[in-house]
Length: 155
Image 1 (cartoon, rainbow, N blue to C red):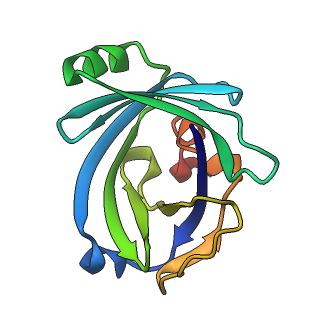
Image 2: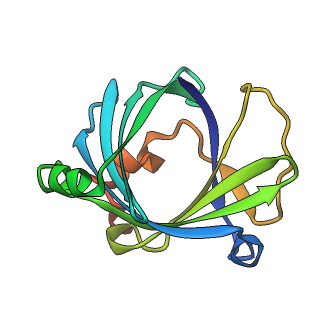
Image 3: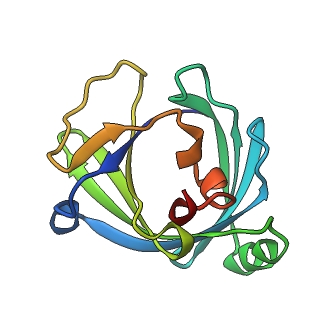
């Protein structure tokens, strides 16, 4: 239940032609306290509730628990979420032996594109595609929970 993930800005839209999947995600937060965020998400036709713990010193590893829930329940929970929501399209691109998830944000976060890659160890080596920009792992303003309160277009 420990997630090890590195996050990067994306410098071009070349990933779109390499994507295996593309899906819309709408999400909100029941709690944005950095010690324990609680996220509700509708991903395509599926609903999810996720609890994330505080990141470690590097911001790369943290506790994550996720459960699929009926989409109708996710819709109801989103109605009581904290103000601010996230609307994005996620692309998945296989690069070497890893899958990169690239999120293109809309609404108040339009213009932001972030790539994440899950690893089995913090120091795991992975292939970096040409469209990968600077690393923003551990920079809290790039966390979705923070983007819902302090959107990219207001920076």
